[in-house]
Length: 432
Ligand SMILES: [Zn+2]
Image (cartoon, helix red, strand yellow):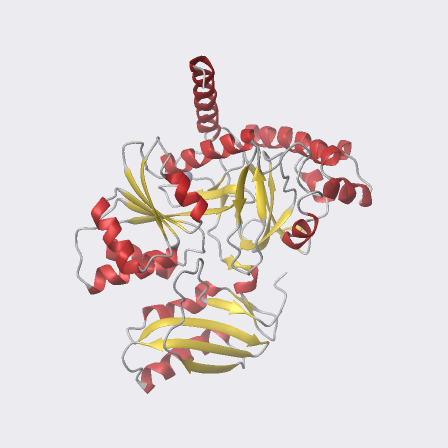
């Protein structure tokens, strides 16, 4: 590449990084202005270029002129992953963009439903700067050594090209003993990846009495970071954990600052928290719906993430103007909705099993409306008294008659698989 062109490209990326860095300290009014400018552009762009959004807006009887601000977005019908899959690529990928001139991402799909997402160059550069900002805010500096577990082989290949940080990318699907060995050889300042993988690594570190793996922090993401998992990782590695909520559909959505508040990247993504189609009040549980404000190659407008979160009106003492949300409670289908209609988040069910010295692995499955099956791998033998106490703890959480079955098995987690869910519901009960 010509040196002048290269200098211009580096200058442009630095300019993007600086602009995005400054955004986080803007007031909520100015962040709202940034959002609304992008909303107007994106809706107009999608209406004229993307068949699926053109049809959705036309069927709802609206034109881009009807969408001027954040509130107007509620007029646009929601879109689901299944709908996007059904029209991919011609109904959703903007003409002129293809796998040849875009960055291609594939979602990991805990539910088995995988989609391919194309990012145009401008959006990719914007979101790389956003990720850089998240990491800086979490304490990671360019000179730090960063050990990352990747669950996507494409990402693993790319990580070796990173020049801004000293990154060692390792496949998160390797056995935990091997991951611990790789991390000890590298001696990282920071580690990052799925919480369940770090829980497995922490168990190796604890059982073998390893003392020479002490990063400053473990940056968690990709799965829900349950409080009991975090406490365990923090205790074993003697460090902090900081969380991140992201998905390829919107890249980085929110991240936890060093004051332990989750900041939403409002200059990049519009996050709505809905119940029966209406925004919930701050502090209330809602279904997360996102609009990616930058990606033109494959727009995501009012896309149902399937996650459950709580908006917050509070502000953070770190001084950032980026709005806050409470930590994720799980995916909508991880909640156990009881026969009475009461919803129990997975965070309430995990601690007794996770903290029991007699339980190795476990999985809580709602088979039917009033039937819960607990699969567990006992550590040695599970005393009858302990089993009874565990079931009683569950009954105390449920507080209504539910049949609970215990099934003792030899192994639950499968090697080589990506995300792990400790609680799932097959009952098909709707949370929202
Ligand atoms: Zn903060």
